Image 1 (spheres, rainbow, N blue to C red):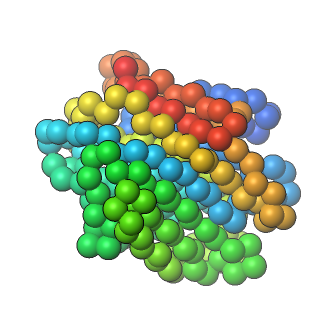
Image 2 (cartoon, rainbow, N blue to C red; image 1 turned 90 degrees about the vertical axis):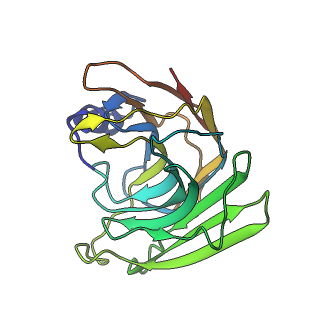
Length: 226
């Protein structure tokens, strides 16, 4: 999940300032854990937008290992001609949970991802469709390329993701504005913090065109399509 733009974001976050970076497929916010701490849980709620056509889009909440995002525990929804729900501990395979959590446009989805500070061999992802009163709780083993004894949990993520084909950004479906509300990230000491001041990502095409504008508040992240 690395990209050149991430370097700028990492520098900005390390010096304690909110920073914008540009990525060919993601828009949203990344919150860095304070020094000498880590995240044990990240949560957020969003409303499923009305999407049509063939382009693919995902909306997810996650805990990343570091700001480079090589190991990412996440859950959310994907649109690829139809709406589905999923959980994943990237780079392991995605698990489709649509049978337990069906998704329709207008539904309210709450995602909570958790990695205990005491034992990181297993993570938990809860995806709940509060509109339909459907919920899935998945225990996911750590990816085989990660060591639970040394795995950090330094990044809290709220993302809208487009997808690339042959290195080019595919057409992004019209999603308007996607707002993550009730956003929180819990630290190992039990303190809960919000996304205000997080570094933000914007989707940028290979031609340089910017496709999104992201803003953060004390408890929310908003991604507006341009």
